[in-house]
Length: 468
Image (tube, rainbow, N blue to C red):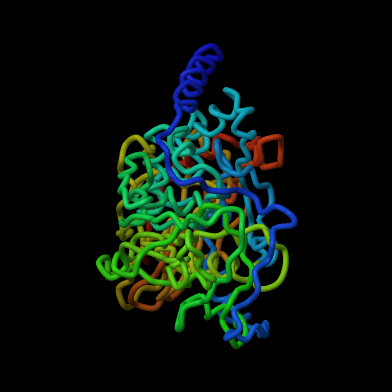
């Protein structure tokens, strides 16, 4: 088995080291001492951080049913960032992969990237997805770096899993290289490059700004949804954001896409003979449909700042991304006298009957007839696979969670039962929650898992309902 893994890893290293075609250079971390441009004279630079706590809290409380909030991709040929200050500021959870620098990449980097995004024997569809294909994190953030090189370092299955993750309702933010790689391709010096290895989450092209190792101001668009979460002062300008080879998109491209596309901000830059980006779109978003997540792309680098309006700008993007998560949908209706078996695996491609993952909820509906004295909901594990902790919740009229359920059965083990006296007629919701999770810690390459790895491929169970 070890020999097989090393063979796979070596093959992946050869694949990862293939040099990409030329694309515009994209930068990574913000350096110290970069010159800060003066704010254009017509802009009022007063920043007044008002309290938009209610709007932020509304988004954050909808994080139930995910293992964690944010996964950060600092993989091969991307910036190996180990902190994301906006997550600390918002109080959301973060896991990450931080590869070695591009000139020090080894088979270990390649194997870990493969396990995270494609999967392994312990986790057949990778960290981003639950066994049934639902998003395991609320959003993924993709760092700056080298977009084409990162794309080429990933297997096709890894790139496909990122697309599946967004299609299933998980959201995406990419800055600089992370914005390039989210698109269909690049336009530079008038030449269109279709990048088949890019994710294609943004159905348009990105354009080279030709601005390297510098700073630009960003003017937030009037009525931008980012203004729901922070005030950004009278000017709505975020000053002096680092920029290193990032991108923009054109208004006509956004207009052509129409449904689901939004302009969030524009560059406020004093153009030069070689850089002409003033009023070009700096940050944009796209949500394909109600079932998909929201994709946000930003050409500049606000992600590393620990305080002030630049940090708040990154936080606002994160909140808007998570606000775009798809709403959870019931697996189906529980009917009296019928046991529903939730025992399928990922490879069975039967998500409505697939096992439950760590920190995940499975929701079901129950139509309660009038005049019933009692409703009994029973949950049972499978012999040999019942050493997990499952919770059972019930509520009339809305999805049931552990913190809002009117009826709940928790504790150790899989077997649970709800006995609800004189249930009101109509639609009820019953939910199963998996409280067993992996242990996680920070190691040399970022987040590492240990402990109950067997939960990653899902916990099977049986659920039924009866009436008296």
